Length: 87
Image 1 (cartoon, rainbow, N blue to C red):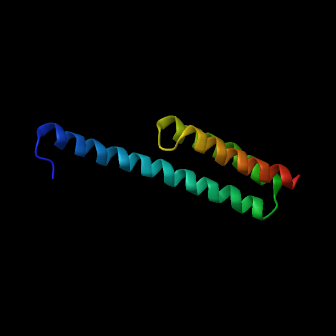
Image 2 (image 1 turned 60 degrees about the vertical axis):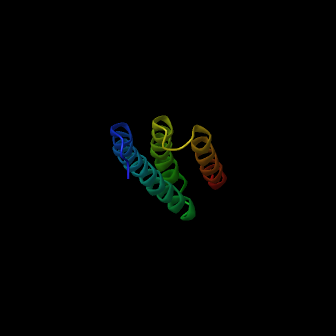
């Protein structure tokens, strides 16, 4: 356990930040699942509509630092390729 005042504060901040990052990651995973389900059902219009929201959620998570920018771009790119294959 932290013994210095500054390390106690750091521990509190780490808890808050990890909870915030986990929330962002869970949101990303949920939207990714929605898009993949739409792709699996071969519904191009629904997948395209969900992709727009997914892109927004992933971009915000990357902007907040929950995931890296390159990881976000890779996720969006791979799912976009799958959707363009449906058309």
